Length: 143
Image 1: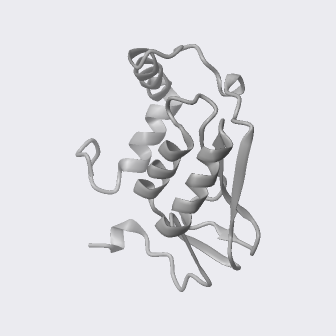
Image 2 (image 1 turned 90 degrees about the vertical axis):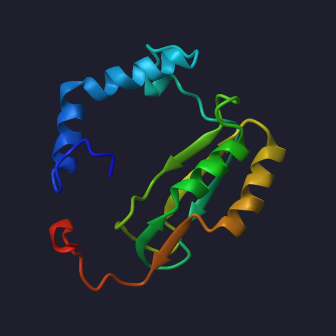
Image 3 (image 1 turned 90 degrees about the horizontal axis):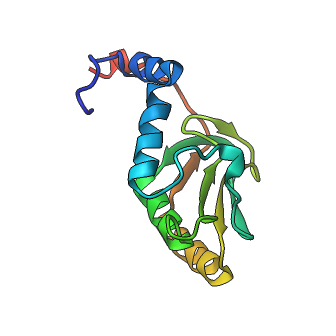
């Protein structure tokens, strides 16, 4: 998609960047440029006091996670300005879920922000869960 890897090699390139530490180094640079603490660790991040868990409406597979809708929800919750605001994804695309399983959690520092985010989230439909996957088609067969 971005031309950084040959067709079919993207996952391998991404895994190499993660294993080598280059991805972490780049993330720390971005955090510092944006005025944050580049030495922050995941355990240092405290989620907001208000939270809402979005759960699977039925048994099935996560067919779609709409990134644009998820970014909108994170911003409505207060991210990046409210440091406790954001989303935690529990189920990735293609994962089997049962009715009631958590798909993602919305965190906010203010109750009104969470309520507004939930309201908008119901119209955006950021996640699609369907009953079955007939076949998983490997990327090389998409040509």
